[in-house]
Amino acid sequence: MQKRMKKFLSRVEEEFGKVKSRAGEIAEIVKEDASLGLRAGGHKLKELDLERAKLSKLYTIGKRTYSLYKQGLVTDRETIELCESMARLGSQAKKQHSAAKKLSRQIKFRKQ
Image 1 (cartoon, rainbow, N blue to C red):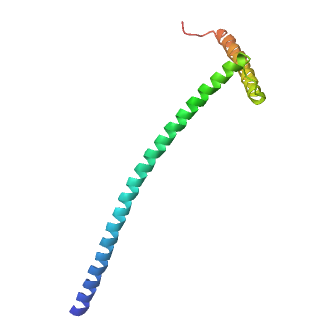
Image 2: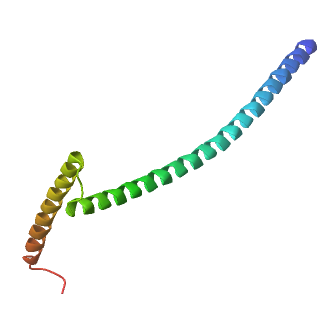
Image 3: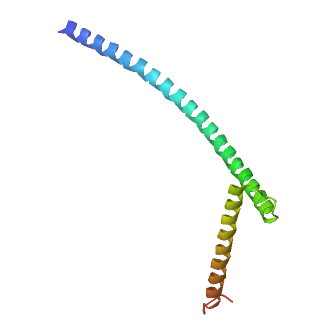
């Protein structure tokens, strides 16, 4: 019986050692993954900043192009069509703004 108990305890100790070793490996993997995750997140933030900067430049290019269109200096047909579409949208937005402003004047209970 004592031999069996020793053998059993020896096996338990051996299995515990394997689990402990594996836990150490897993902890190292998690640590590495966390580090890689943080680094990847940092790269993603930089990517988003660069995409935001690109959009800002695109907005500036669009404003400049639209300004040139209004001066009659744009000759590319596709760009002219885009600018004409932009002009129509601007006109529609002004109409909506005027309608909203007119209705807001009719509101009887306003802050004074």
